[in-house]
Image (cartoon, rainbow, N blue to C red):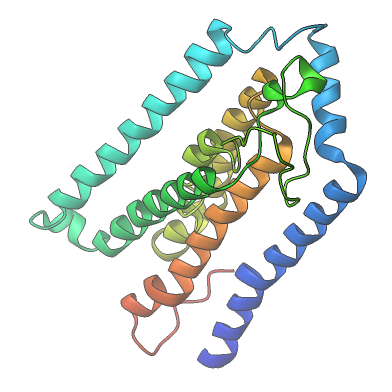
Length: 242
């Protein structure tokens, strides 16, 4: 297979197909009102009549939210320190581009999700009349009616802290191909754990976390396709590790 053909295949495999699947899933969620159906189920599961009982629980708020936040900050700081050490340590110089790529993907994901949260109007489930709050439910991409207080809950910021590590898949693809699926699984497990905990608290709908996952994947895949693989072998292809 030629280099150009393989590059085209990777654009399809890592960017086009995941984007199409994501668009399909989002379309089905919007059409079926899946956000509300799942949130209704979680709300009833907690036997809630006024608010979300798990919103301020030790497990969900302190362990999963605050503790999870601190955990990913420690990971990012540790990676930043490792990037610095790679300047002089011979044992790290070989993987320095990958370390920079990993850190850049995580930071960009968190920044993009944070910026979107600041400009979107979507309320958290716990803000809605449907679940004991004060605001009506407005679909994600509909305009906010007059008199409705805008929210800052979309996409899922906490989930992004976990999903921001999906770049581990491409990092391992280059340096340790046999571990690439383990890297992806670890990032997904972390992101899903954060996401589910926030849904149980009433902080987010399922689509909020899925958007964070897709943003993280777009950042990681574009970073790999446009820079990482080209930086390692300008004009050539990364060895086929499929």
